[in-house]
Image (cartoon, rainbow, N blue to C red; front, top):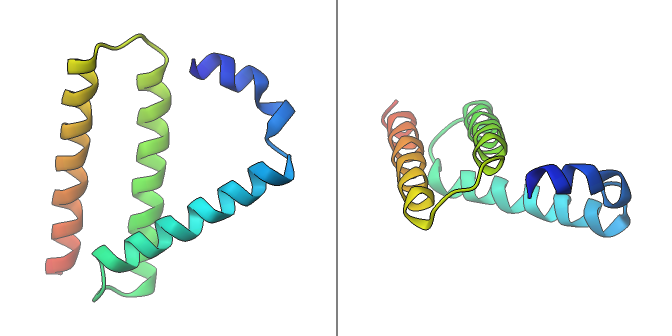
Length: 94
């Protein structure tokens, strides 16, 4: 699926609707980071958001390139969730 989407990307990547969706997603993610890291400096929050976003993108790309069973998807999702939660909790304690 990921490969097919990548092949089609030039057809939709620069469409106004795609730009609007990306901007909305970015604002939503920034609001989420403000909510989970309310007492963190803006610089630390941006760094954490960049790291989490890059990790989600990279792992998602790699993970989606092979067929997965529902139990495998659930296991990976829970592991990623645990990893991000531990990271966010660590930042909140700093």
